[in-house]
Length: 326
Length: 255
Image (cartoon, rainbow over all chains, first blue to last red; front, side, top):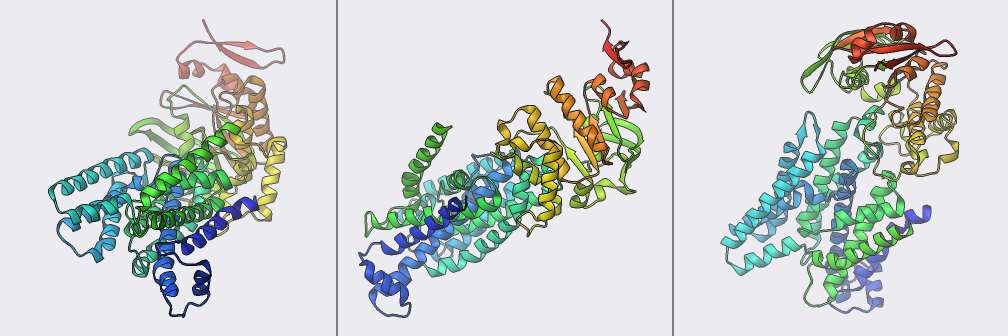
């Protein structure tokens, strides 16, 4: 069990190593290591490592960890394995805000902030629609999320049809498929505080998520304040997802698949599941981003596409193999 | 212990029960009987503090249950709802351990010595030692029911509320589960338990609460309830009474 719990952090460390070692410019491993242990050196290897690769790896880690942590919490709360952090409208809201901003010619530098705000606003709308009494109704949350997301996606499509400019299309496309191209320390600085707050709230949710495993009514019977737990989980998931979306756009599948993989490795105990999901999510996003940067260098593949092509077969293989053994 | 005064309960905005007054004594087993839809589960939920009564109050040691802080309520009242199935692959020991929830502050991630003691005692009392390491969803219904009871015992509450704990169980397993609950009353635990089988209820309970026609028709020792025509009134059919070899009264619907 201990060994299994160590697996996700080890995977994240390994992925980070690979992420720092590979990139558009071929850099010998010795130079990478030298730059890594001499953070104040002033050569080209140092610049590549500390100004390009390090922030990229950290951005990818944040995006992967945040989405997986949000997905694990939402799946636990709704006890529905198909739930994905994008279900609560965050990504659709971010995409709509960004599409509108692009259509009105807003400066590119404020896009992450706008994406964050749009994502937050859409999630609040979904949560408001899903309210029943003082709590949240699981079915209504899913239906409201799907409905609002579809409406916002249609708005994005409409803007995309109306605005004919190529730069609009390209920037929007980068957001829709998910990409970390050009992200650096500043972007990380913007998203990190929200992700950290979301992560701290997630730690507080561990106890509720454990209780929720036996069903809402029974959880209430053992003294869980269901309504408070629901709002807290939704709040954490929204902050984490919005932070991830503001950095990388709509990176799919991590929030859906990683919690499943983590559950296979460490079980459904939230104390083990949440950290395992965060580490595995980070590992997957860092590895996918390393591939995205290096396969057709100097051009880049969108992160979301690499994740789909690399992550989904892994998921299918692990899932099917496991089903066979039963 | 728990006490209801001038209680009226609603379900989905419709009044289902009125004028309910009762008091549960420590170590007492009260079986709740009544036709489908009469409000047995609603009454249980109100006792657990899940729902607000339309009129009147349910009090635990003099305080309204729905006003108590959730954790404190859970340390005094354990409610075993017969609700959803489990999707998760939980091991039996984990399910029992979840019963310690109301004693765990949010920052504490693992069980302390007292938790471990309570979990071990609950496992021993329900005789589930042999399957503590198995996956809960792969147990039989009877075994699962024992595990739920173990969880409720780990909760350490002096009042147990159970909603049809013997549904889907064969007669022997149902008997064992009820005997197990009966045994708990000897340690001072009070049990309020919704049952469907009238004779089963009569054989295990100290008193039977009969609900029907929107009110409490009786709260009396089983022999009295079984002998009276209130039973026929509650269920709306004619009942025949018979005596068993060991002198107990049983009822069966008349043809």
